[in-house]
Amino acid sequence: MSGTAKHESDTDTDTPVGYGYCAWHHRVASGVRLIQIEDGGSGPSTMGNKFACHSCRQAYDLVPLADRPL
Ligand SMILES: [Zn+2]
Image 1: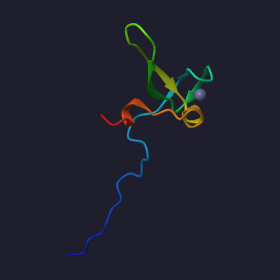
Image 2: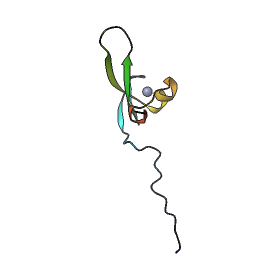
Image 3: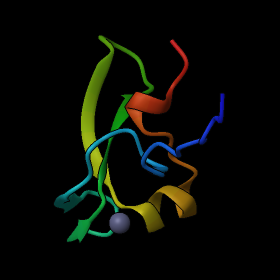
Image 4: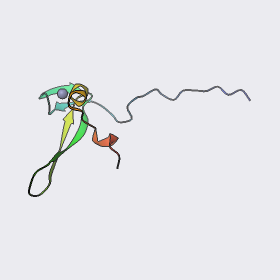
């Protein structure tokens, strides 16, 4: 049995990326990911979903919603 290890497609992102509006630097960028914002404060918990590009995710230490542990 000769096993030919075939690599699956080397994708480092398992979620589709695309162009979108980055809510952090207020421009359309590629590879934006959905970030869930928890507006910590008094009153009813207000959560919002915004998109952040790769650069802003690194700069602001943002974790995409899909990458968060449940
Ligand atoms: Zn950005």
